[in-house]
Length: 311
Length: 197
Image 1 (cartoon, rainbow over the protein chains, first blue to last red):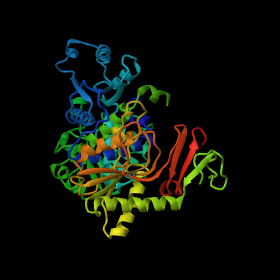
Image 2: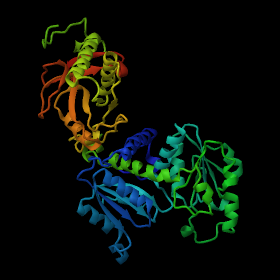
Image 3: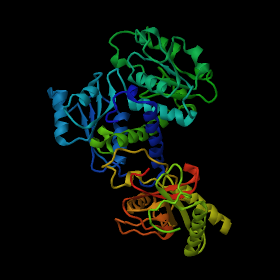
């Protein structure tokens, strides 16, 4: 692996390697010295063209725990606001000797362009591009599920909400199906892509019929900032049909876990009681995110690139 | 058994390891581990301060076997775990990335304890250097000792073993392989010319 651009690029073995490595990385949290020397002398640039709290902090913590040098770049307050192109930004990073670039961009495909254009030689990690993919989020979700459910083979995972705009949903469907899970996406028709035939999952418009047969339910954020037009009549109607509240939660089997990639709209797609309930693993997802990003950075950056390419 | 002469001895050659010689068999390994267990107890005046940490992969079952022997002799169990050194290796930037092995530090930690590192083959000493660095990030043992099943020489660092199953003079072109039932279905230490597989 040289880059991590899409969850679809991961074979089952590679996905398991990342998850197993993350398991070891997670045990670091219990140690007095939360630091490993694996990436000493490597430089990781967090290249964020779009707002983010947990993903950027998570990548920063992960890189620092592996002893890498971290440079944070956010488009606000940089030369991008003066009109610098992605290419010139990439050339600048190359000139500074970035070994790894963690890229979030509002346009789908921007990390792919960085990785394949030849502007820079470092490894590129997609930290969310437009409405396309967010592979490390899918990995940390799979990691969290695996810790609670054991093997994901044959497990029933339900993803609810704004699938149309969600890079989290796409990456999760791709990764979870690679890992052998049965995925169902639930959304109002207006928030599903027009053609779902290429997605390796089932679809439903009716949340209540799916909930009793699910091992993990993942609520997606309603992404108002990506919605130029009305996709549903009102927020209240959305909440009534697709929000997870205490009554809906009661339909879930006993050991089903509730997940949310964050940031949450409490009271919209998930009620506060559910988010704070014992079924909720939302805070744990954040903890696991650091371990997964450590595993990804370690596996992409620790070795020598020359040998890696021939291997 | 006659040393280092490369004449084949068909009665001990494993069918899967053509061109390799068996230098320790299952009972040799068993006796060596028993002796090491006794030496550890003698040196440390009992099992009280001792924590055994095996270095993956084959150091881990060796540590467990030594632990079982100490338990049998002293009637007291010794905290036993494993210590992965992958991220502390000095060649980490030179080789393709490798997956991590499991690190399992016993519940009471290693502070103030006598940590006995257990590995199968002591060669350049670089693995042990990495293990010492890894230990430093976990705690501060009172002392660190090293037990190995085979010491094949050719050290590249000032490191020596405290407990040795067998000193095995080798040439650099030879390859020493340790087989353990947990991984390979048999207990044996084999020596072969490099390239002969």
